[in-house]
Amino acid sequence: MKSKCILVFVCLVLMVFAFTSAAAENMETVTTISLQPGTLMADTEDVGQILDIAAIRIHSMPEGYGAFVLSLNDTDALTSLFRLEQDGIYVQCNALGQQPLYFTWEEIKDFVMEQLEAASAEMQDMDMPYDMSMLQSMMDGTMTEEQLLEMIGFDEELLAYIGDIQAKQVIESGSFTLNGSDAANTKAVTALDKDDLCRAIDLPIVREQIAGQLMMDSDYSQEEIDQMVDEQLAELKQTIEDGNASITSTVYTMDDEFIAMNFEFDLNIDDGSGFVPISVAVTSTRTTIESAKFYQLSVILTQGEEEFLNQYGSLYISDEFIAGQYTFYSLPDEPMLTAELNCDRSQAGQTTGELALTVHEGSGETAYVMFDLLKADNVTDTSISVYIGSSVEEIKAAFADSSLITIDLHTVVQPDSGFFTALQDATPETSVQLLQLSDEALENYMLSIQEELLTTLINAIENLPPDISDSLMQGMGGF
Image 1 (cartoon, rainbow, N blue to C red):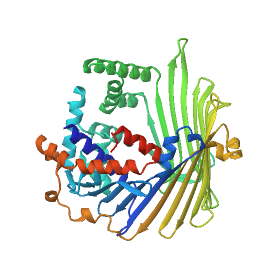
Image 2 (image 1 turned 135 degrees about the horizontal axis):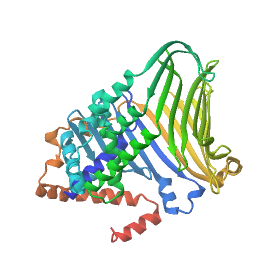
Image 3 (image 1 turned 180 degrees about the vertical axis):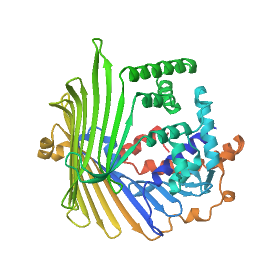
Image 4 (image 1 turned 135 degrees about the vertical axis):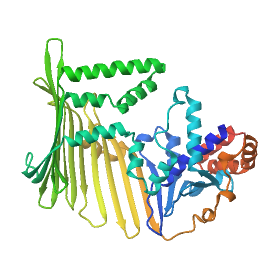
């Protein structure tokens, strides 16, 4: 059983990697990812040496084909091919023998449930939030609205509550603006009072979320968790009722296109000397400047007369460039975090830009990211470089000294190279159905692939940098 767990887990992880790049119709998309360590990684010499010679290659094609390849020193050390179908998935990996593996989605669902039940007694009565058919539908783009709602935990009671809230919405037609935004022709106002909010607290999904968090963070029994959840929900409802909590949301649209939004939450809390008003005001607007769109966001928290934890952001998007700023304040004049984005799209087929994130608390530190995307016909090259320093100015003054890592992605869309030929004719009958094997059959299978496993491991080690390779070989007994 332990061998089954390991093999299935490895196959699922590699499958996720393999399907991260989209495939054009009737064409094969190949993305090669390589990493270049910077000066700041000099202390981790072994990691730097490995990154210098390692690359990940991801292949994908229509009709559910995908592949994950780990290349070391220009040699494919690990190759895994996948083919997703409506009923299951085929896997072929050079480390697991020449014969493909086959798993049905139902088998995978049952297997995952078995592992969850074995791992924790508290999980024995817990239902899977969605079955493996949902994973398959997510991969091939056929997920229905009902499946999506079930996956994210929307039950009938929650949907009924949402429906009742939508019924309270007041919609007006006319000409509206908010803080200099573009003109809107529709305004939708939704107002929730304390009764609406208390009803939300009683929804099963709220109880489940709180109980799940308590279960993860503690060793309490189910009875203790239920009692704690009851107490927390009762306290929260009392706060809402005593503080006369309310929410008002106003959304402005132009023919269903978003223009602006204003959200206000109000609550009175008892600070020991009386009730003090607390409010959260969120405003988002869009303004057209010639052919560009200018978006603004503000989040203002107020307790009594004092403001704190305010946030302000803006984003300017045009055909030629994108510019954005964001600031998160602990107090009105004390920023905790700032971010700035600049992106140049003025050259056809090329996008360059920079992103700076600065933490102002403590000694302060800045992460500075430069990116460059160049597209020509069927080839796209992307380079992302990350730098760390005390400020953007310091980083720019000495790029080499503050470099952390550079990530390069080379994507080619090409005719079918035949990379997936080995899986095209695979059937359940010609594949190893791993989850159907008895313990004895599994043991025989593991013995039969020992040579491939060992060959793959030695091939990988031999293609590592000499110092690392020699050390690992000695540790294995001199293979």
